[in-house]
Length: 364
Image 1: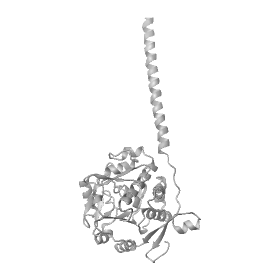
Image 2: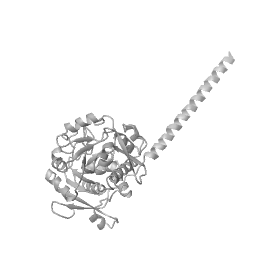
Image 3: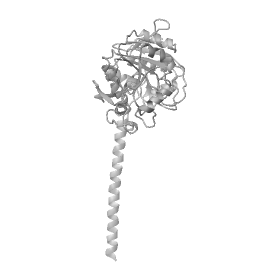
Image 4: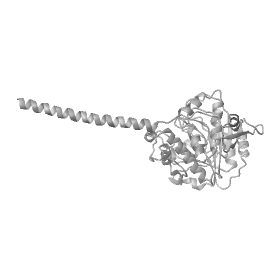
């Protein structure tokens, strides 16, 4: 009887030791994962600073170069045409009009009536790529085309979902995170790109401007996943990969992908940018039920430099008395880092001069 009790005690002791060892290993894994996640996912919030040349000079801040950004307060087909004409460009060949058709149910996307005349004047084809996040009605070509039709874009021009037949790889020069960018295969069919952007907030990037429109927007669904995860994952959806990707890696990857597109388009000679600042929610046009718009419409801006254009739009938001919500969204997602990195890798200049075409010349 005593031997039997001893055996039972030893057996229980062995089980307890195994349990404690297993628990220790489990806690060690959890602890190591927590340390990795905390260090890997940490990023510092960059404070906002104005980058218009007048402010830079008044504050004695240095800058190497600056770019011109044209602006009109007239958000109309006529205003859009005037700001486009100010760019003094002459697209030749087949022209792609890159815009977002907007998620089903989102009312804030660009109004086809606003852009119709310009799109048709340049004989442009509206281009898009499929999404990479779960729950989207634009994740597959057929549904995406239906959304484009429902939102009125197929009434004003042909629409091409550029990754309907897959993707092609274009090189990324000088990237920290990406060595190649996977873009919609049909990008190769176009000779010139006119980027029409609805400037707004974004739940992941802080804001959606010209840089996002040519990076995430021109990437295939697989390419979008790669950008969101710094080149680590390529299979949609982006949801899991985004959870294990540092925010700065994401925004840097967007900047690097944007530069690759600019380089592909004749080192920036075959691409121009126009951004419309109206219906600005803190959420992107990719959100089916966005947070309500709570700031006034500002105008239309255009430039050959996407970095200067995005910086000018951001600065106008930070000058707006009713821009607090969008300002907070940009800062909390460290959205300004895309501008920092874009300038560092030579995509464009943060310093800019605004030429308001409503009154000829001068800072707005």
